[in-house]
Length: 118
Image 1 (cartoon, rainbow, N blue to C red):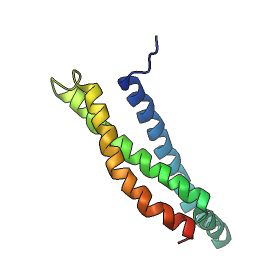
Image 2 (image 1 turned 90 degrees about the vertical axis):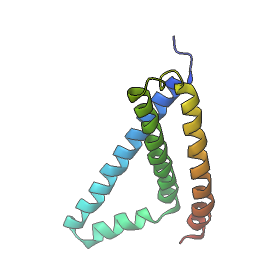
Image 3 (image 1 turned 60 degrees about the horizontal axis):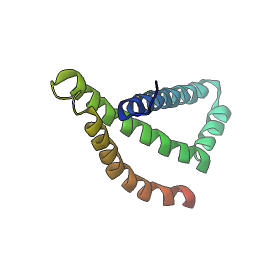
């Protein structure tokens, strides 16, 4: 039965962040391909990339990449050490703490720039 423990949340967040990264990659490739159709299409897409909505979505991509990378290290510890599985819940809390320590300053720096329009 699903009980929502640390390992299950880590699994869900890892999969969701991986899908978000994949979606961003597909959007990026589509934007590059739009250049083949002419500058009007490419410029329209680039204009969308500078909207506040898309810039806020980029904060989500930054979070996804950061979490995915840190949790990937947790998975490596679990797979290649004898102690990783035993302490996987504590390591996940460590991953979450390191994520917050890195991501909160990113938010503090980038959010004002998004709303100023730079």
